[in-house]
Image (cartoon, rainbow, N blue to C red; front, side):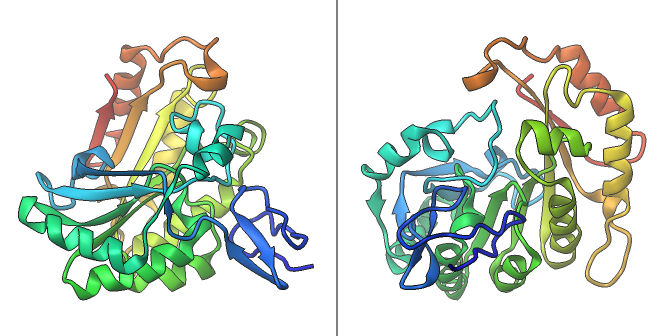
Length: 286
């Protein structure tokens, strides 16, 4: 039975079945991405919407998404295409776009201010093969590639993509193992390892969504910013304090409609805490 090596789960997948992410499947004894080329969303977005504040500010980027995810965040804003039963239904309405077609489309929009392609909306790394094939063609056209990711992937995946990715926004959703394991069904250590290595190969910015009663303590924010401060670039230079951190406000959604929205005062206070050590801290959804 083939084993998927994308994330920490190492799903053993029977022929024709799917792994935890709902995307990776077994075919003729090999693990493949069933969502290869199938797009559920495409839009020309401001780069700041990814969010990226220090990468080509003021530009637009062609943003595309597929379906499936390897986390189970109960507050997911894109649950219809990420991990709910509706994701499989959405897959039937997806449009198939080859890497060549997507690269050509991105190039055509260059006259409208487009700088490249952002792989976003669902989790792009569970279908990294499509990202890789497309990113190579986008780079050949002199354009940029961006990933918006939860960072839940092995370093072998990052190694394949690194030569062709120019920037990432990576979710650092909290800084306790309990939160990642029990609430998100993820693995904090894998995300930390991914962020450490990503900081060495491209521009990165990080995002933390503040959930009341879960990851909103000042102590946790200090631990999180201490980790960011420890990051280094590919030459070993400490660059962590310069890495932008986006602290976002939560609104009740999906399986967390019983939670109150994060107080604006709380978001601003945690931003103040982060600024004790970080140079570039931004608040969102306030």
